[in-house]
Length: 338
Image 1 (cartoon, rainbow, N blue to C red):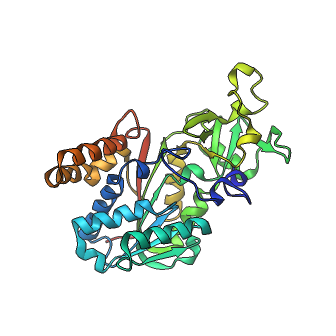
Image 2: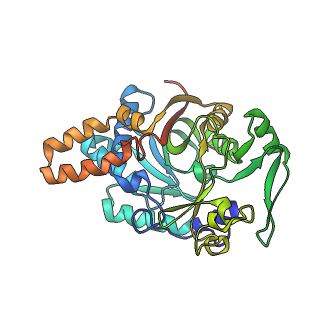
């Protein structure tokens, strides 16, 4: 998975379109009210006194920067005076994405909003931060486990289950996993955040559940088609079960590969780093808690009916239980005290 997504010619080493013309949708590409709700949350955290007015708002894995830009735009609408004190930054390892982010912010805000770009968390040493990320943990490297074995792949992309390494075995035993994915980087990532920020609130959204599903969820997204990973391997012998005219070699590094997040594992990793779990909810409940309904009410009072209905329909994708509302979860971690 690491090689597929981040290797020399990996999927995320090139700028990728998200949305209708890409391989998949995200909450960010669905509605600007996703960022608006997060902006409202940021304002409440500052008013509560947990973070100061001059804190740094940091997005991790920002793609083109749309989410952070939406947050900035809604801060301007809801509490514009904060734009005089807040600082903004993106952590993004890919140079092509950094270039797109810088260009988008310049086109959107000119010199009014200054954006700092960092290649990794290790470059950050801040007293406090409000950190946001959308769908990053589903792209962390993982091992595929079955009973007491894990999947290996050779240079010819032949697959075989063999002995688990010690790291994987420890997590399999800890969470009593029989079959599924084991993320490898949660602990290191949480530890890096603990070193980067003296105090932080981290708001993140992803798909998955508290408990593992005890089955493989790993899949490919190609032009909005979800393809089970194992359907493209020799483990599936029945031709009727294989996608037509699609091969693993043909999709290698050319589409997204992802899996469900095991949130209990993620939560434990952050607790181990010294953070506390502040909130865990479905995306529907989280965005309602943040104030998305109030934002939509504000729009209805200040926009024409056509504009309101269009934005309402987009926002519904975020909270509809049959779309993103229940399938996606929101988590807030905090490090530090008021």
